[in-house]
Length: 207
View 1 (tube, rainbow, N blue to C red):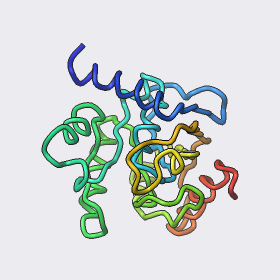
View 2: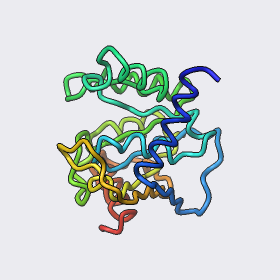
View 3: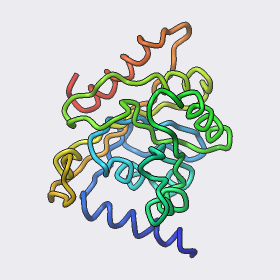
């Protein structure tokens, strides 16, 4: 077992210990490996990425790369090593200026057989409301229609690690995986994005 593999095993255990996360699948059992997916989720905490990644069964986790902000994760040192070597993250520029280049990197990762973890709101919310989703999810759905888009609702993460805090609160998190959605023929961008947003709200019991 190499250093990165050992670190991944320890990171999964630590994340589960801190958050007590429970994974719930709408269809009761996790999906089979081998199918590419984009797991798209609400964003409320710095722990969100680790919680989704740790909630996946090992065969799915090994093929899944989180999409992460380059300005936060690409700093030299342990943070970058964790992102690149352990999580196999896809680092992208924040903001609309690099949107086209970021999409190119995500499509390339999908073409290499990776699945992705994506937060289409773009920035963290309050855990109760879900803002408008950015266009990246739509472009992925249009460019790679065979990839399953799996909604994920994260519960309690904003309470476990609120904005501005560094010490987690001992509460139980839930990762709720819904049924995949797809882009319908001739579906307009805003219609699709709102449908995806409503899917997340319904998954969290907030529709």
